[in-house]
Image 1: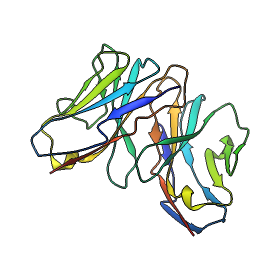
Image 2: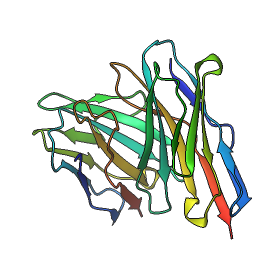
Image 3: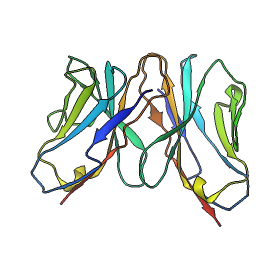
Image 4: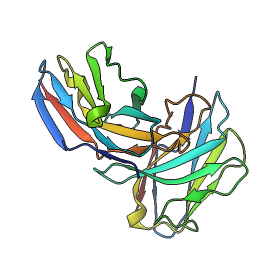
Length: 115
Length: 114
């Protein structure tokens, strides 16, 4: 159980364009989704928390207008990086809250490169 | 505030050696959860273990073992008879009850040389 699908695995985009990352929970319903970011050779840092049907809560220093999060259903959440810049190049990982499963399942991650 | 410290940035050992990865945490909560994850070069996070704050019993899983000591706020991870496939970055993480988000340590890059 607790299978998570994250797409795309990697993406290269030009500066100024937008990129959408999808995270799906395939065999469970995720009421909460956590989005993490990992810069090269660094640790994972929480960017935002979203609850199904509600607005996302962003961590300090994360621009809510730049990183749009949609959690419209219990099985799908999306993160859109708008007007991407090279400094947004990073590894983005989703993590759905799977009820009593405190194993904290993670998606396989999306490596974003902005050129 | 919660914090996780992995003081060892990089460790390199020869295959078959035992290696211990240190993890020290800080939290004001009495109920919390501690985790270890493995991150191979491909990037995905592989769950290794979860331990809650009321269970100080050490755990062994094959070549892996974990030592949880609340008195020193440590949750160390030992790999016995290391193998090249163990090479990865290992993260220790903490979650306070109710918060559910994970706070990660800086990670330890482990290299097992043949």
